Length: 233
Image 1 (cartoon, rainbow, N blue to C red):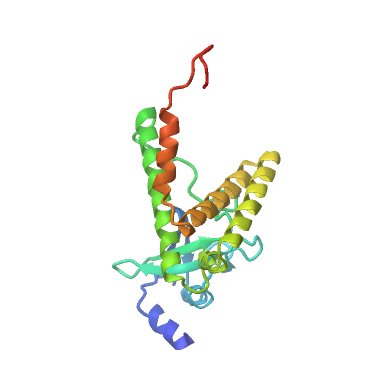
Image 2 (cartoon, rainbow, N blue to C red):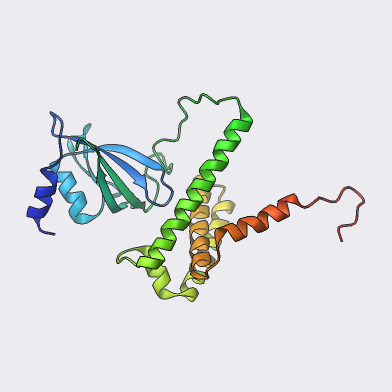
């Protein structure tokens, strides 16, 4: 798209008196909100044209390209605007942690929870969040296989076929092992997510539903464990 087209899109947005608009960044795979930042007209245009997030730093008063120094860039998949035109939502494929602390998201500190202290309720919510995230991820990967959009890493894996997918699973398995040996929780979290993602790509490629795997795990969880002295046969 030429610059004129981007300018026409940007003209529809409502910037505040400082010439800024809030930009929410959300992980397309997990649905998790990664950060809230601000953009001016120039950084909106840069983000749309480069398909990576650029922000305006209010503290430094300068343009900030996310990941320019850390390598943790955010590839833009799509952009949505709210009903009033005064806030943007960027769906991205993050190439690393969004937070400068090394956390996946800038929102990692619990501020308030009405269910705090109720372990059973919290456990139920965690189960729901896990199920929701996994189903969203499977749906996204299936859509990539069906549509094969250009520029998508998932498309690349499917186009290369089974051998490439298996090679990546082997690599991610090794990196997960190394992360565990390094005793780095952040590294282990990231590598485990990469391994799980590639495993789901394999399942989709082979026409196997995640529910089939979960059903097998449920069967194993319900098996009676042998008591002391009881035969395991």
